[in-house]
Image: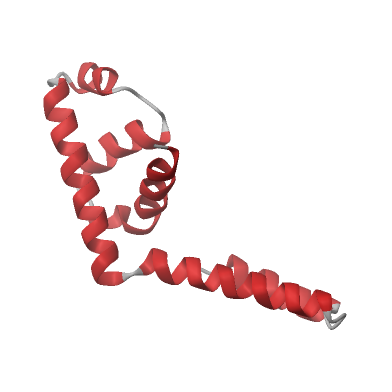
Length: 110
């Protein structure tokens, strides 16, 4: 469950602009704020089933966006390559202040 929560949080970060306000609110409360289905249902005066259905459909939408756009996969690959580059430079004593700054700037770029 922890892995799924992390994945949904990352997908939400990348694709939240493509979601409706209700989808954003429900997913944010459920995954980011750790609200239960019942708490969200009480907050919006709907049934737990309605909240569950909305969250499941939103999860599917986020996964579909990722399948089509691949922003998370590209981000993860970039992070992996930057880590490998940094490790290589450190191990070969090639890492200087300028390279460190460039690597940090690349890491900060989304």
